Amino acid sequence: MLLQRIGNRGIRLGTLFDRAAARYPTNVLLLDHDLDIAPERGRSLTMTDVADLVGDFGSRLWRAGLRPGEHMVIYKSNAFDITLLAIAAARIGAVPILLSPHLDGETVTVLLRRVDRPYLLTDAAKLAGFLPDTVFALSRRVLLASGTDERTTSLAELAEAPRVPALELPPDHPTLVTHTSGTTGIPKLAVHTAFSLEARYRPQALATALMRRREPVAIHVSFVHSRLFTALAISLLRGFPVALLADADPQRASRLFARVRPAVLEAHPNTYLSWEQLASDPLEPLSNVKFFSSTFDALHPRTVRTLIGASRRWFPRFGQIYGQSEVGPSVARSYGRRRPPEADGRCVGIPFPGMTGVRVVSRDGKRPTSSSPGYIEVSSDGRIRTYLGEQGRFERQAGERWWRMGDLGYRTRFGCLHLMDREVDEIPGFGSTLSVEDRLFSRLAELSEVVVIPMGDGPPRPVVCVKDDRPLDRAAWRAAVADLPEMAAPVQWRQADLPQTATTKIKRLELARLVGAGEGAGDERAGEPA
Image (tube, rainbow, N blue to C red):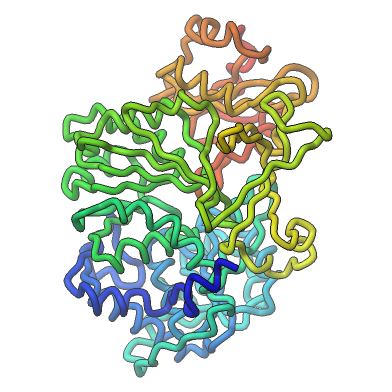
């Protein structure tokens, strides 16, 4: 097994900042927001500052009664202290369970039921506006990161707690629980170990391995996603200054990037889509980026081409990694100015040699092709160990070696994996919806989003968003779809109204339900001729 070659300790989350501070004590972590648990610390912290903060709050959690092996659910307002509190819990041997701030209270309640009376760490805003009172019965104790509530214990009340030394659990013991995207329903709770996280670390470390100098890294990744923890380990243990963004607003990002001048940039695909406008920003916020990275979904070729064109580095690259919460990064490829993404269509890359494997299983007994894609399956030591509270569901999807991704695709004779559609999103007889969406993006610069969804009583319907919410140019649309598979007239929505996951993926099934029910910001335009 690959794990035997990785080492016997795995990623030690609890001491991440201690080790970063020991190596590079003055290295800087920059934020675009204040920490709810320590606003007085400001937005620029050294590794020594962060290590002290994690040690302090780990001791407060211990004083609150949290002990090694126990679960603590973290569901609070969006800020980087979500990640810091998770590391603080891991530092004392507890197992943090991270829930996105974007989840609704009902979903949080369902997930709490899957855990055996955990500690719940939230804040007054979430408790008052989102969470039902039933969370008190489902939790052993409710802690507040900020604000006050007489039914809870505030972490502020536990200040000056005696410092507790870091405690390491065995590397095959659960160390972190994150949730899946929830694009098709209630999210699942994915259990990671130090071993599985280390297996994910190795392929992703290639980005900074290409950097000869310690230049700034900027990251806009959900604070509850496992990717953020490996990204931090990769960057901070090598001494790279890191800027973390809670807000993807292009104007705010532009000002921060113009000041920091990141050389490595990582974000969700839809965030990159919204950042296309930075390519023409007079501040040239992307001019120093040498390596763009995205580890969540395939990006639209227009986005890749636009962002690479904004860099002034000699050989900028765009690294695209295809993976999943359950298995981590699985296949990868990169693009440059000389090899545009249009060259290989929906190719998402090849496996990492010696680290991951991929196969496509036929659905009709024949070799999978673009016209008859098969089931994509991945093998990786980065695979989670189970779904917390749903072991049976995990076993139904997990073979001894292979993990079914829930996606359809095929491999070329050169080994390139082509991603066609999610299994649940396939529209029989239509072809790849993702490919059609790519072509629409490339042909219509005004689009900021397009999602082709099935309709039960007719051809698929495109849901479109236009930059600055301007009306769609119907003549340009008709020209763009002339040679594409038959589609119904487009319906225009405001992008802010699209149902999204914590990583900004569009919830296609939910969107199809809303459009079918005549709901949504743009439903009044649905009847306009295509």
